[in-house]
Amino acid sequence: MSDTDSDTERDDATFSMFGDDEAGARPRAYEVLARKYRPRRFEDLIGQEAMVRTLSNAFETGRIAHAFMLTGVRGVGKTTTARLLARALNYTSADHDGPSVKLDPLGEHCEAIMASRHPDVLELDAASRTGVADMRDLLDGSRYAPVSAKHKVYIIDEVHMLSNASFNALLKTLEEPPPHVKFIFATTEIRKVPVTVLSRCQRFDLKRLEPAVLATHLGRVAAGEGATVSEEGLALIARAAEGSVRDGLSILDQAIVQTRDGEAVSAAAVRDMLGLGDRGRLMDAFEKAIAGEAKAALEEVQDQVRAGADPAIILKDLLEIAADISIAQATGDDYNPGGPADWIGRTRALAQRLTPAEASRTWQILLSGYNVLQVAPDPATALSMVILRLVASAGLPSPEEAARMIAEGKASPGKPEAQSEAPPDAGGMDSFDSILARLTELREINLQFEMERYVRPGPVSFGRFTCEMEPNAPGDVLARLKAFLERDTGEDWEVLQIRGGGETIRAAEIRTREERFSAAAAHPIIAEALKSLPGTTIVDVIDEDRSNPDIPADSENVIDLNARRKA
Image 1: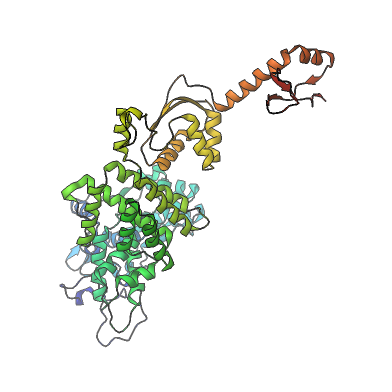
Image 2 (image 1 turned 135 degrees about the vertical axis):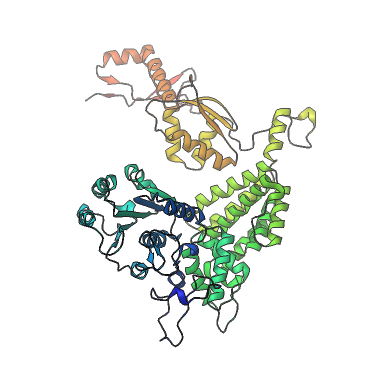
């Protein structure tokens, strides 16, 4: 849709974002959907009703900020909204003169602003012009009145990429802006914008679109293009877009050309295009895994990998299934996420089949596996191992049952009461030593090193870890330990600092070594040797090896004979 199309020639009953070629017009080059269906009015913005309502009230009451900050993920309409806002601030038509969110019909300055050629609306891409000289050149013009519009508007995209010096140069103008100047900033990284700048802006957080809302919008766009995409195919595109309208339109653009001669785009075609797994078969794999059917569960996911599905996306979809189950358990009869009825029904059935703690454990196992898959040399093999771990968890008692058994002092179900013993915890990590052993087994070298040198252990039981930290310990050790324990066991852990913890492993090693050296040095023979040979020191003290016949049976320690003089 070109920027010179007349909005007044449109049929008001049609969707306002759809472009329409003028009769008899010369054929134009193909325009991608993300540009063709870019909103031209505030009414065209989807899911941003709160922002539009705020702006409308501000314009009506005359309480208009001098600077606006638009933030949100990619593709939610930050730059488009900035241009709409620039039009709104400078709107002048035959029957209206003043700021307005009603931009139909086109105002006096609208076409030039939409085409980025209005002399009073200046756009700066901070990603390519970050220097303070660029900012000073831009701001020098703010002192002069606008050429033809009511306000001189500065749109700065990706503002978080400005240098500190540029932010400082901008700050002075933001503190005391000329009355005819308005700033509109857009950013995907709001945390990188100095708080001194944020505090002087009216902030709008543009929301991601819900998958159901985005799928409906994509269906309207497809219909406007004369294409047919299946309902499930639209849902898959909306999920892949992750709330971004632009990403959704770009994927739809690609999906439409998957078929020819007016054929409908099927869900299978969209899955193949995006490298997705069949969600129905993924649900089958999930059900088989939690039922302990290892072979069947593996076949389901391996078949999809062989068909071209990405292992990481398969695991991400399994995580979504686990999350949906927990949400269904929490919301009960109110659970209605939208989508096919059979999918919702299967999710509800799984929610009734698993306990809340089992659903949480399943999520933790899959999440831990997803993190491992990111660094695994073979993602497909890593996916298979995650499925097998999920299958193994199906043979364990539920966390609720394990807790009850421990509280009652019983062993596994079916074991005679007379022979019962306190069963082991669900994860096997009920002591400081067992946790260190697990870190060693999984080669968590950095965390193991820090645990040995900075942690003074207190009482430890499964699900609860207490300790006292060394003063020079890194500040994130306990947070990383908690994350590791929860990933590895699939359970929530309480990690607390206390007073009066024991020795660190390293301190205990040093103390034990010093005690052995002191005991060796006190031995009459060694003491005499050290006295008669000045400068000699004990290199090592080796524990007795009873299996070595060369060592006297009555000796307590063997002194390393490689004693040497100090240089």
